Image 1 (tube, helix red, strand yellow):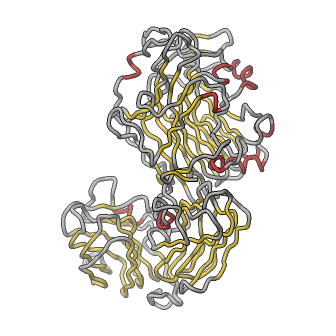
Image 2 (cartoon, helix red, strand yellow; image 1 turned 180 degrees about the vertical axis):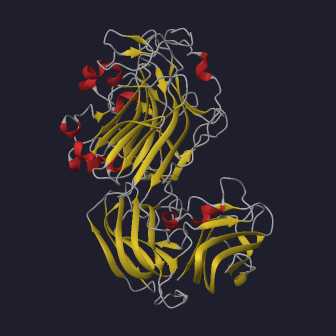
Image 3 (cartoon, rainbow, N blue to C red; image 1 turned 90 degrees about the horizontal axis):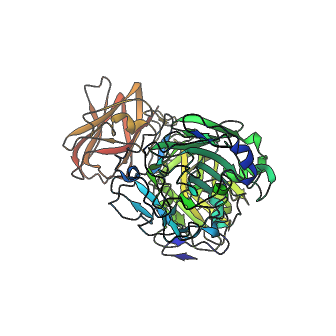
Length: 623
């Protein structure tokens, strides 16, 4: 069932929270010696001292003042080389406000129901979960009364979207900047902060740990540590040695209680064997390869999408394995501060996604919140969801015939377990070019060999009791030279080729360094060129040699051109206009042209908004 568009978990589907290292490994981990300063315990493990001089206190005593000091937030970092930014949140809400529930879920409830022995109650109160007005999300653990083992409240949140993952042949990186609770082993017994992700199949009833869990950051009892772990297989024992999982063990995290540090994990499906890599402040401190785990268990746990979770637990099996807590000295008010969270993807280079922004229809929609257009908007956090019956279909009109060579589908957990990709040149007569029978994996891609204007996903069976739910349908190919509905060919009669991608682009101006001309020809629909806020402005690309130009595709941001010309030049100085309009509507425009030149430019003379001219992509085709 659905309530206001948000899927409600059926009985028995409450997400579990397992031990990041587990009781089975506690003895071995306790023998680890942490690098850096600190006092040694009887087990030989170094612990952080009370460097700031704050009192250790007792339950109910406020945590050290340094915890609450305002810290200038860092901007969400640009994507690492070779990656693009898929999604991020920098928590820029006003002070003492809750989270946007279109983006986040509060996972409220008694801690014992998570299956880990936690004793807190997770709430959606701004006393426990809030944005601080300085660009941070705060999860705060609070205690009342005199019994340290009772009356704790705290916060746990997870993303609504569960489509974050690596395509086959690609890499996904989940990253956050976090300050762990500013407690020590003297006053932090029982604290259990975590940044982690669960496999999306869990949301449709695939049990833990087979559905997969990747713990990116865990620490317990104020130890100034970090643990990274994969959980997979079966609930006890099995290929991942549950409930311990397989992971890094305890690693030193100097200063992680008193300052912000970057925690990240990469799931790499581009290498053989596949890998998961854990990072602290950019340094890879642990790598796990798929050949270290049973192949089926790895695939079931890793080769799909995930959703992200932050929580600050109190008590439970993991803290107990390292001495237990909370106790009479444990302070109330410790908080986990998150500066930003980001998802970055490195995907196989299939060229531009020709389905993005194109007209899309469907057999049905679960509600107005989940229309067909969500599956081709380029946003992995929006989705199409059908009615709860079979069969269902989603169809995109590419605007002209294309020689299709690849398709990628990113399903929500409620995927189709059987479907066909079908193509058509007229929208009426369909040919099946790919069939997927009984494969509910939520990230699927395939090579194609078809020429068509229309492509549809025809779903005949569902992997859950819900509808067919698709985050993104991405299609790749080049304009067809035989039978294009708009008559466009490759100028000389041969097939048109994308000539502009990655070539040198310049512009009359850029709004700032974040929106430069090369971003309009980088093949990434998540980056864009934006000009100064005046008329006229131009963007031009140097193709490197003279070509016959047959088509120009403009993928406008909202700030588009009302009046513009497409112009060609042999020398970059003398220009010939091959297309002109004074009624531009923005969006995705495919313009047939006839011309020859080394240089091609969009010359904008009137804007549709008060902002500049802004293009996600400027594509030139020809021979």
